Structures are given as C-alpha cells and as structure tokens.
Length: 391
Ligand SMILES: NC(=O)c1ccc[n+]([C@@H]2O[C@H](COP(=O)([O-])OP(=O)(O)OC[C@H]3O[C@@H](n4cnc5c(N)ncnc54)[C@H](O)[C@@H]3O)[C@@H](O)[C@H]2O)c1
Image 1 (cartoon, rainbow, N blue to C red):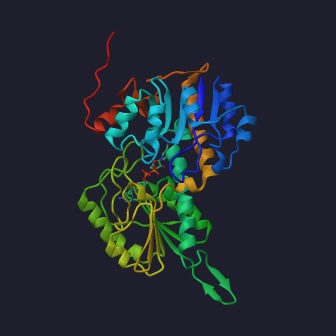
Image 2 (image 1 turned 30 degrees about the vertical axis):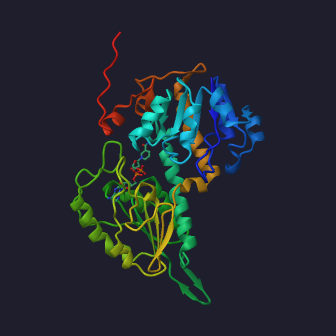
C-alpha cells in the first residue's frame, strides 16, 4: 500500500507529516511512500533526502491524493479550516486518512469527511495510555508550544529573564507564572527555568505539584475545593462557574506579581476557561507579557485575540496560534514518529488491519463507510448510537 504525504496547505504552516528518517521503517513494513514535491522544504527536509531514504516524489497534490491508499497530514480538513475543504474532492472511498481532524469541532465538518468515504483517524483522540504514549501527537505539539511560548515571552519582555550580577548593578530575575501544568505547561516551566527566571505554576489538578517542584518551580496552592479534578485519562474536568469565579479571585494577586504569565489551561471538547480577566490585566505592571497558548480554543485571558498580539495599558497579550509550526524541524520529527508508530500498529504484511479490539484504533477511528462511527463523537454531537449490523 502507498502512504501519501501532501504538502501542508494551511496558510503559514511549515510542518510536514513525515520526515525522511521514518521512511525506511514504513518500507520495511511493506509500504511505499509518496511525498508531494517540497512537502518538507519549509521544515528543513529536501526532496533528495526523502528519495535517499526510499520515498518517491510526486509533482502535484492531485497525484498524491490519487495514488495514495493512506494519506497522512498534519492539519487535515477540520483542523485546517482555511484551505482544507479543497482536499475533499480529491479523496476517494476506502482511502485511509490520518492526522489532526478536530473531531469535536463542528458536526458539518466531520459529516463532510464521512461523506468523502474515507476511513479517517483523528490523532487528537489517541488514548492516554502507556502503550499509546509514543503515538501521542498532542503531547508533541504541546512540547513545542510550551517551549516556544517562553521564548516569545522572553523576547517581548523589556527585562532580562536571569538574575545578573554585573559591574552596573544587580538585575533581579523575571517572575514567570504558568497556569495549566499539562505537557505544554511543564515544558514552559523547564524552558523558563533554563533561562533563569523564577517560576511559579498553578493547575487545578493537585497531582502536578511534585512535577512542578521537580523542575524547580513553585507550586501555587489556592484554597479552593476541586471536585473531580481529573478524569481517568488524566485530563482536567470542567468545573462550574462558581468555581471559576473563585479561582479568578484567588489568582489575581499572583498574576499582579508576575512579569510573564503563560496560560495553557484547556478542557477537552470545551471552550478554554477564562482565568485572567480584564481587571487582572489592569493589575499587572506595564511591560508585563501574557502568552495565551489556549488562544486557539477561546483563550484563558478575557482580552486575548486569537492569532494577534495586542497591548492593553502597557501589557502585551499574545494570542499567537499554531506555535508548533514555528519549530517545524523538530515538531515534524516528533509528529512523524508518532504517526509511524501508530501506522505500524495497524499494518500487517503491507495491509492495514482495522482491529476494533485495539483501543488505540477504536478510540481514534472517526469515519468509515460514509458514517461517523466513533461513539464518543456521536455522543458529543447528540447523534443516535449506530446499531451494529448483524449478518
Ligand atoms: N499517554 C499518556 O500517558 C499521556 C500523554 C500525554 C499527557 N498525559 C497526561 O495527561 C494530562 C493532561 O495533559 P495535557 O497537556 O494534554 O493537558 P491539556 O492540554 O488538556 O490541559 C492543560 C492543563 O490545563 C489544566 N487546566 C484545565 N482547566 C484548568 C483550570 N481551570 N485551572 C488550572 N488549570 C487547568 C489541566 O489540568 C492540564 O494540566 C497530564 O497529566 C499529562 O501528564 C498522559
């Protein structure tokens, strides 16, 4: 079977779904690899490198879609809400599609993917189990985003990050607060510490306290009672509005004392909770910086404008989206390792085996045979459960 890698078409996207280093593993499993010309160029991978690893280069996107049995992308239609729709007519029934599909985005989009007849898998739905860890594309993206958010903050802040003792006096270190300590938050703590900042971090899941401390950060404890902080998969559970209100009141003081606030708090399938209000921004010193990694999901700061950088009374609020795309070489390397690990669990003797007994496959499968077949997505969009076909 042929694995096809189209060039990413989302405006400004620089990643590629497959890097040359993983091609030999796929060929060994009995697959062929066809890459659209220059698909890897913006991430730093040339056509010649793909060819030297055994991939073929296709001159056009149409050829990749036309010849591939398995299409792999970073941003498929769904997560690519700008140019992704143009791919739908290129798809054909029975073709496999793997990538970010934003399966809990809009029903119309998921229905359109189903109608294209493809057997699609959304990497966002990868179960958070030990076995699936090496396939977890969300973690890879979060790692790149957390790292980059700190660099952007350091570049924007009119202060040094580290403490410096110089002949011209002593410079005090920057105070950085990270709100939300998942994968992105942990990487942000580690990066800010490497730059010498004094780092505090807060999450509603008390389980992360030790992780924060092991990275040299201070865990901010708020006198708040959290009911069911996390689900079985390790994700935060949504709280009621009274909780968020109290959380904001308590966070205000910590935010006012910070030079940089990096927010990463999200709850799967929900709009990001507002944790930094306009009043809290007013309480920050001029020159302070907020980098809102949750911007794409509505933002943790009330004033964030998704995709934009704004200044409010001297406080810079950065709502840049798609941060992983700005570290494209390594973000692509990590993503393609995730994808090839996933593909290789499904491929036996050069053929794809959709084994629904495997939770990695049953959780990520979105559409098949023209239908949305994923029970979690059907429930999310209040679609009736599919009745199993007998005989
Ligand atoms: N395969 C695996 O085993 C695997 C892979 C990746 C992550 N994980 C675990 O899953 C968990 C979630 O990771 P993630 O990075 O995907 O999370 P995420 O991106 O869904 O959320 C980011 C963080 O925001 C926090 N948050 C949500 N609402 C908040 C609020 N109101 N106030 C403060 N914080 C809030 C969450 O608790 C989470 O830590 C982590 O424990 C992580 O270690 C496991």
